[in-house]
Length: 386
Image (tube, rainbow, N blue to C red; front, top):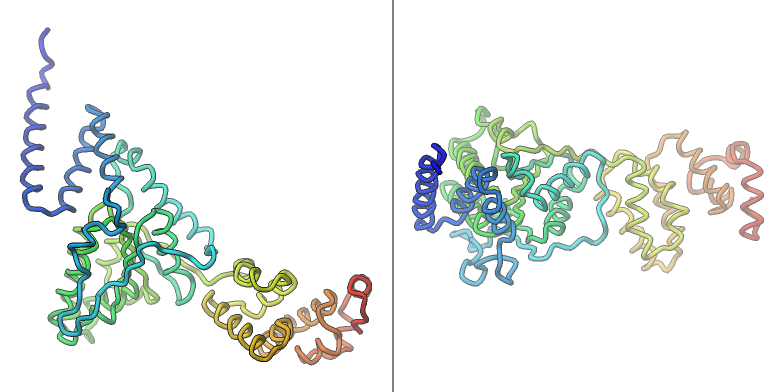
């Protein structure tokens, strides 16, 4: 039978690909080898699907060594030549104190990154690569670093965090070198890399207030992101997106906006944080959330931790400390009246105590509180709350 006319061309194409792979392999650059193999998996997905799937599986399973950081034994962490400080902070097995609470858009974006990594074959068959680089944008304390830690945990990879205080050398000429060392090291591991406070090194190059060396850092960073392998996950976080160079924006395929938490998110965060230590938190979480409106998760965690410490050291009930926290909060008058009325209706405090905590008069509380609810609460608690 006569061979199809395209067979010689296919053979020539495979031979050329093998030569290219051999040439790249001899350079010893692992990330370049992975790029070539992913390209082959795409190219042969239709003509040799079993080979394409096999390549995809091999790439997805890296690293095969027991250590979470491949070549960890013979590849030391990069350090600054001046200070000898490590340029990276490594969390080999990322762990979370409690499950994070993300806005719906954030949850969707993070879930997509995880799904892309778990099912790379589907993308490759469609001629697509998984998302290589994502930019997290939002004010401080809204969960950007926690999101990176959550992603690393879900993907079973170590988390590497760039310490920008260390990478910025006193000799600015070395800062670019430090940055290259960090990125090259991260490329050699199957990790999640987080560049925190990206705006510190990726400012707009048209900012005339910046010196030339800092502008050259942007160029170095752009080159490194372009060279980032699709097997890795590169994340960056910024509190000041307006400061970023437009070219840096374009290098990140996915932009994830982290808003300040709403009332529901704050309530769930308080429940998750306090439930193991304070079983009665359900009575307080909704009320406490009112006082934290417009604030970040880190603000909430800090203030609640201060209240818990004060309660322990002062040997007073945690409820009392929460009352002080609520009394000192800057809450609008209408919200303060609603809060005072609610804590009386729920039987948490007496009308006199509610007045002390909130500054709302007992007459106002008495008029606003539902007599039916208050009576039910009195009978349930077996005490007089008037």
